[in-house]
Image (cartoon, rainbow, N blue to C red; front, side):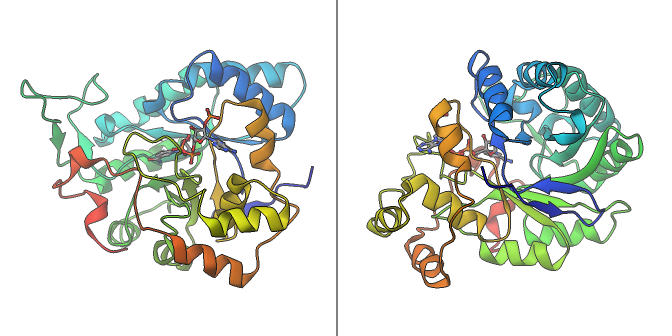
Length: 313
Ligand code: NDP
């Protein structure tokens, strides 16, 4: 297997450009998938408090450390702060809760999952009696102070953001004492995000692509373009699957990718993309078929002052 390269953060820490995503990976499946991924050479694991699988992932990771397959320092583990813990004083306890779930003393990267906040408390998606999502206007700049405290306490080696737009990043960079090293955003054939990726790179913020396959079978019903004739032709040319062409396309934006699968054959398939590259012309041809459709829109939060997708970049 070809070596997986790293991206280097502005603080010097390194992140493998390829990892396993775990959104919607359920208990029972996720332990096996993470364990098998580590056996295959995956070293980057992405989870979130919201996914409610930190405990299972932690069990699998600790078992692979205990059996000598890897050391903790060989792994890069990301988790994310959920929207109902955005008050400054809630952030460190939320991070500690994730670490307790994982059974780890630190994560490599802790991200603010979304820029907007929900009513504090137990519910992941707090709703009022009319079924309306209960949001608050807690400022993500306040949340960031809590994130910085997580870094200072050594609970997170690095801190970053997810689903932030360029205006929100600019505002954050204006006050941050510890800089965000990463923005995790949706990037796939439909949504190549070149302007936001360029913006992040200019500000020394690495990008991780979520839903790099366009989340096939997504609830929003967004087609993922993997059956587009251009992708299919390239898959024949390189003797790769359409999914491998799509992943290689996203990777070649100079970013990290975290495709999710719980299927053993796909764990292998998805990582087998480091032995070929697409030409500039092929990259442009794939860019031209992008529909601009977003899988992850969080439509219930539309209208919130920190909803990130109302601005162009
Ligand atoms: P992906 O684009 O990774 O697609 C995952 C889906 O594709 C699953 O249904 C999987 O099925 C299927 N799949 C995986 N490999 C292949 C393949 N080779 N061929 C065909 N189908 C395949 O979507 P995700 O939304 O899961 O994104 C990846 C990760 O990014 C998430 O798991 C999560 O960790 C993160 N994420 C972060 C978000 C954020 O807001 N920060 C939002 C969304 C995701 P199966 O498992 O059955 O094999």
